[in-house]
Image (tube, rainbow, N blue to C red):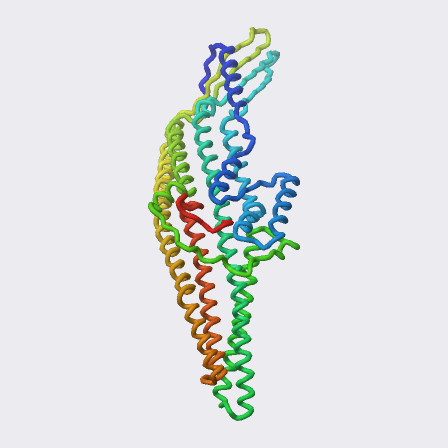
Length: 465
């Protein structure tokens, strides 16, 4: 398809227009922080912890120093989260998304490089020299809109990266409580095993003296065997939870010898009371905010598709030709694609479909956010009530029963096997309370995540969280 050539015009005007466009394109530059300040501020506001991107050896040394300081003492949940936010390499890799998005934004503000064509031909003794300087006008016309689109996408990526930081923080808190509970589970599993071992030894001795039947001996031996298997399962769960926490915190070498507290934090005196939790979540959740920006950006992109549906190639060129023995020929050339076969309808339809897809996904995100808040708050309150019930009722009752049985044993009203069975029941109740307490702290973490990474100002959270 031959371009439309106009042989008359003002070359100075064309050159001035091209130079001004090039100067405009040269104004697009990279920011000093690369978008990281927004991520840092959001993370600080919602977790109380800092993040740092490692771009150099000095940055890595600074992170390592901070990590060593936190690892010098038994970790609380806040310390574990801080180490993960600084040291998790998957999160560090996510920070690169900021640089890529900003590069797209800067590129959108820069024009496509102009083209220069030089042609020299000979026809007999005549020499024909053609010089053409071309500039893509469509890129110039649509540059402001393209910049706005990429600007929205850059803001969207900031929210997505910050949301990933919050996800890592949430997963670290969950795993932290899992690891402590698993360690406590090993302790109580060993206590049960010791009690079972004592019962099995006593049953064996009584069986040898003829005071116990083979069935009664087998029961005690079976319980001891099951208790031994329970220790193995608890140990495995403890190792797996600790290794998961190690991975989240990005630790290796000697740093994996970090210390955890012996016990889970105590249950708070009162549960959190939340009003308008759904509205709070929709205002604060980063996935909802990112979805809104994506939808707005696609709406602008749709407008761009409609603008360029008929004219998607428009090149302006300055021509200077020389013919042997003739005056120089000057002018400009305008090339335009003629929409003879492709009227751009397919591009517009595709853009509209992508936009509607984004609208529905945003609606789905909002609906899911509301549901997750309701579900997590119900789980939170149920976990709190259950842990409180174990703490205030079941565990004290088991202790009272144990004390009474000890008195009865001292009075020779019951035997040693009844006393051992009661000890097993008491340990099982304490172990169940530990599980309930762990479930509470994980439920509190899930509630915080469902609300967008932080709790409302009128609520309080555990110290160090």
